[in-house]
Image (cartoon, rainbow, N blue to C red; front, side, top):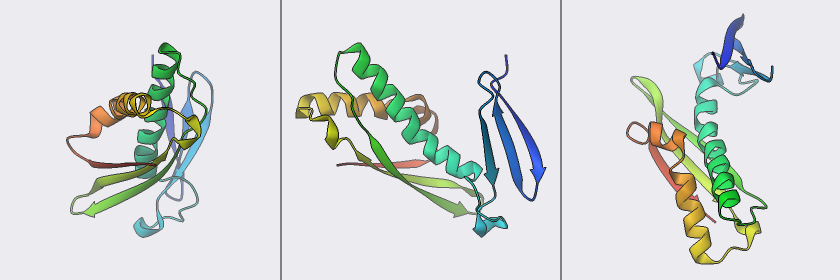
Length: 133
């Protein structure tokens, strides 16, 4: 069964539909690549999916280990190379301070997140820099 359907809707934009939930995401080309930058670009979604995947896996880990998980926020920086045009680096600043974990728990949760499927998929082709606060 397919996960999503993507349609080109013109003006360098696509509409992506999650088939199970019918949730829609519109993408736009970035301003440095002939777009308007009016929505996430496909490469923005790639970089953003890393933080989203990490938090999902952290949540699963916390649920399995009965660890309260109250908050997580990330700022995501995507760095592009030009020849060929590709994402070369993703920098994440991750704030977990609202959880009040001891250092041992925090390290276990961080490690779980860093082994998320998106991280493992891209780790050999995209440099990933994590900064936890």
